[in-house]
Image (cartoon, rainbow, N blue to C red; front, side, top):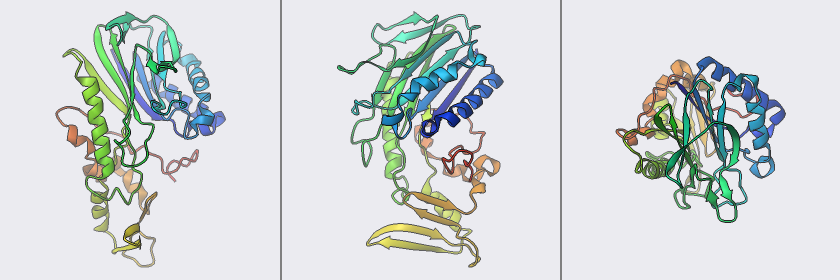
Length: 332
C-alpha cells in the first residue's frame, strides 16, 4: 500500500477564491495523479483564511469543488473533519483533515474514540464539522481535537492545536495527527537561541506527543504533519551572514532594538540584510533556494530536540514558504 501525505496552510486561499481555488486544486490533482497513491491524507491549517469570520462559509464550497474533480472519483471512501466554529474561541483551531481511499484498497476502518473500536468505512462523507454539539463542545467520536492551552504562547492566545484520527487500512493501523504550532511574532525577539517561540513550539509538540503516543500499541504507526512553524535558528543565521557582510548597524527605541542592518562590503551596494520585527529583507534571497537551501540546513535544528522519539523524512525540496502572498509572486 502506498500513501501520499500532504499539508497545506490555506491562510490566503480564501481571499480570492475565484482564482485560488482552481490553482490550488489543479496542483493538488496533478500531484495525486503523479503519485498514484492508494491513500491520500491532507492536513489543512487556517481554513477560512485570516478573515475566517467572513470566509468560513467558503470551506465546504472549497471541499466540494476539490472533490468534484473527475480525477478523484476513484477514491471511493472519503472522510473530512473541519473545525469551522470560530464562534467558540476557547476550542477553535481552524484545522481540517481529509482522507481519500482508493477503490483498489480492500479494507478501511476508522477508530471510534468513544467506543474504542474500529468501524468499517464504505462511503464518502467528505465534510463533517469536528464539533458534534456546539452547546456542549462534544466532538465527533472518531477524532480527537484540542486547542493549545492559554499560556503556552508568550503573547496573545492563538488558534493553534491538533486533530488526530486513527485508521486501520489493509490490516495496518495508522495515526494521522494534523498539527499547527506557534509562529514567530517578532524577528527581533527571535534573536535568541533558543527563542521564546522555539520553546513554546517545543512545549506544544511535546504536549501533542504525550496526548497521542501514550495510548498507542506497538502495532500503531504515527504520522505527524502540518504547519510546525519551525524556523531556522535566527542567531546562527545572522552570525553566518555577518561573515560576508561589511559590518552591522543597529537602530533602537530606548533600550529596545527596532532594526538590525548587515551592510554590504561595497558601500554603494544594497544592504545584505535589513531585519525588523516583521521584516526580513535579504538581498540575496536566492541563496535560500540554491541546492534546496543546503547552505542553511545546519540552522534547522528545532526537530533535533525530539530525536529518538520522532523521525523526520529527508528534506529534498526547496523552502516552500512564499516571500509574498500575492498570487504569482511567491518568489519575488
